[in-house]
Length: 176
Length: 162
Image (tube, rainbow over all chains, first blue to last red; front, side, top):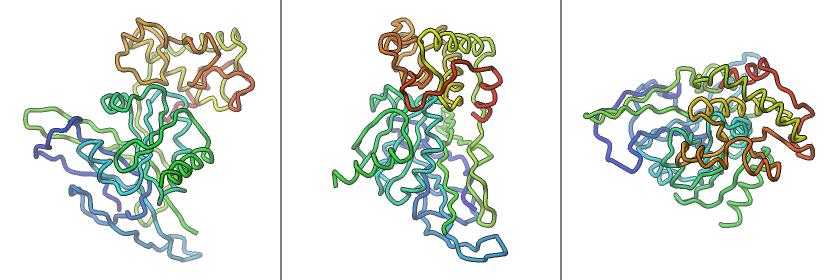
């Protein structure tokens, strides 16, 4: 069972620019699938290999890899960016932004398809205005692809799954 | 054939600033992490956002219908988008006194309301019929539907899980 709860920490976190604990859920990362029963998160999070599970359907038993979203805690957004090996696609959104909600299922689909290429992170600009200000976010949704911790490509507005995949692949291909 | 239950979850973090610098993190209970032996359907985290007032929603709903007619624009084929934007406008009307565009990030919201550029209908819409919220769509837009009306029931139904 994936870790679904963690204990509150009373140790002082080194103060960083964003001094709230920042939890980001990453879309299915190829290297994560946790079946530990532990209910406490160690920081930094241990990465576990994909675990092969038996399909629950009795009629056709076969081994299926279960790829799951990985939950990690970072002390800041910067920390998240530096501790991720893949490029990160960040979706800056707001709760009552129509196109942002429209993109939610599309982002799920894209992050599944590109799970080895990119990691998806969503940031609520109303909850983290300082991060939004730092990257000069104006229109929503804004997508920024971060590579090596720095903004690499940036685009605004809703788009279809195919268009988004195209954009991500072109962007990462060109600058390699 | 690979089964994936990958979903992207946005976690709401509540940091309690206190003298002891302790941070409490609360994760919504209906998390979308599947246990190994069950296949969970794609489930989004259901976390009720505070809804704007009924009165403001009604005002912005009427405004949207009127303005769509007046400007010759149409609502999105996906009425969910229309509904979310109407609620966003209502929310800003409640909190700021004016329907500031909900599809933008602002450094200082009250200042923006005073300035007026992004009060719906915003200047880009009034001048060039450009609505990046996808609320008012010109007929040539790929996402434009054929309707210029939306009922309160539709709004409620399409935003039930936000």
